[in-house]
Length: 513
Image (cartoon, rainbow, N blue to C red; front, top):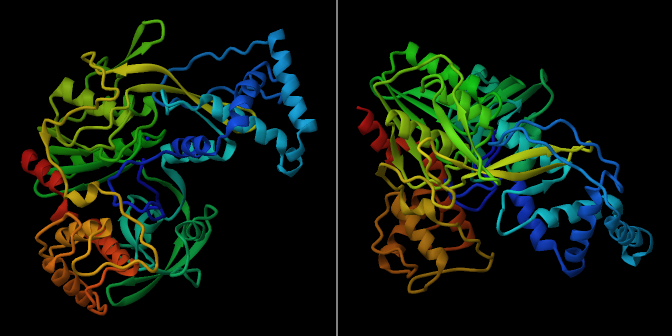
């Protein structure tokens, strides 16, 4: 489900952008699986059944369902049975007699959370997951893409946030923040030694409050007073060359349909005749959102997707009627992180109005989840169906193939390795960091004759030139700091000079013309 990434904050992974994004619930699932041990495995089956036995242990009450995640409203049945008595007894023994329980803070809740998480975690279905109140809130925020802040997206460059994107109708846009600005201080505090999370906390705040940020714009220092406000980041748009409109949809939150409608109105008002819809790295979201957005392009009553349930029955989700926007050509950009609701829209536009898909094969998440929240704020997200395209094709585990396959530079498909402080590589050595160095140098325009991890003469020459260009000592030795500088430069160039490197967008523009 988004990856990527992340507003008013920098990417938190050690991986080049455009890699697979994990939703907060999926991260929680992975971590929970790693923490499990033998006694928890046994306890899992016991306590979950107990928990769902009409609140025997916890007294939880189920709230009305939250907005669906590619789903329909369903019913949750809770029943009791004498067979749960033994399970309840074991739970009570652990709470009252387990020796190590004295060292566990809030033992009751800890046992219940771990038990439920363990029961729903499955290699068969990684998208069914239990979320604690905090994880549930993070999950909802990551889908909706709205928060109170200033409305920027950035990457870290040499320890400081470099503005990568300024969102439309945001406080940052109103204050005059520009792409390429570097944040130096927030309310007088230097952010050079701060973590990404710390910077996010400093920038965000109460609605209506003011944050004072000092920027570096080229060689000039600029201080701006920015009033924090709610920011929606589901859509970004601009007019490209000629009459081509560019619409990036980053998530399908509850307000994304409204944002997309505003974008289409604005683009049409500016004379746009062809449209590029960028769904790369869009991990999905709510069915109602993608249904509404599809309605801007498809006639009323058009089938957006079909849902196949456990009993074999199939329901169809159709557009309900909305303002129609027509374009001479529609190009849809996809990649390996285009998933779920984003795949729904891509498939519908491809099959029903012959939109051209450009990029790489999509992720292949063809399942439907229902989200149920509980009185304490926790939630269960579970799979209820598999979805099919309007033509009845299943994409789960396979994805959607583009009409025109275009890949980015190879560096964007690689994990970025960590290096130890004392680790170094020099001429005639071999290592994975060298291979990533070679790919990055090639991306940045430095000549290298190989990318297999062998430190040859061309790698040495280009590395020395790179170090010199950045004002570093030209040692020709790859260290942790040097690799970090290469990584930062790669991210910065991708963020600020995408017109030079985005081969997928270039092909979309070519087709749109």
